[in-house]
Image (cartoon, helix red, strand yellow):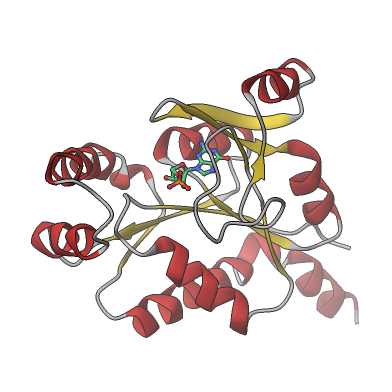
Length: 201
Ligand code: 5GP
C-alpha cells in the first residue's frame, strides 16, 4: 500500500482556516487530522484530544525530550507541537494527513518531509481580515492591531508555500482545498505504480 500524503495548512488568525477545515472534513474521506499538543488553556467548547491534546509545560517538555513531537514551536507564550506517532501511523496506513500549524512549524515539516504539500490561506484583503478579527468581539483594540501586524509578518512566509487559497467565499475556499488535495494525489510521481501495472499488461 502506498503511504498517505502530508498536507500543511497555515493562515494568520482571522483567515478562517478552522472553518475551512471543519467543512472539508465533513465531505472528505480518508483524510486524517493531526491533533496537536499544546500548553495553552482550552477555549470554550474545545475538547481535549479533539481540538488539541492539552498539557502542562513539564509534560510538553517531556515529549520534546522523548522526541515524541515532529516539530514544535512557542507561539504567544505557549508550546504547540505535532505528535510524531499519530502522524506517522496515519501516513503508514495510507491515510492523507492535514496539519494545521503556523509558518515556522510548516517550514520545519517541509525540511523533514520534502514531499509534503504546503497550503496557505489568505484573507481577501487586509481590511477584511481586520473586520473579521473585530467581529469576533473577543479582542481588545490593542489585540486587534497586534494580530493584524502579526498577520502581515506571517504573510511574508506565504511565498514559500505550494498553494495559496483566498478565503473570500467559504464554499469556494473549501472547493479549492479539495482541488489541491486531488491534484496532489494525481501527480505523476505518485501514480507510477499504476503506470507500471498498465505497461506490464
Ligand atoms: P490557536 O491557539 O489559535 O489554536 O493556535 C495558534 C497558532 O498555532 C495557529 O496558527 C495554529 O495553526 C498553530 N499551531 C497549532 N498547532 C500547532 C503545532 O502543532 N505546531 C505548530 N508549529 N503550530 C501549531
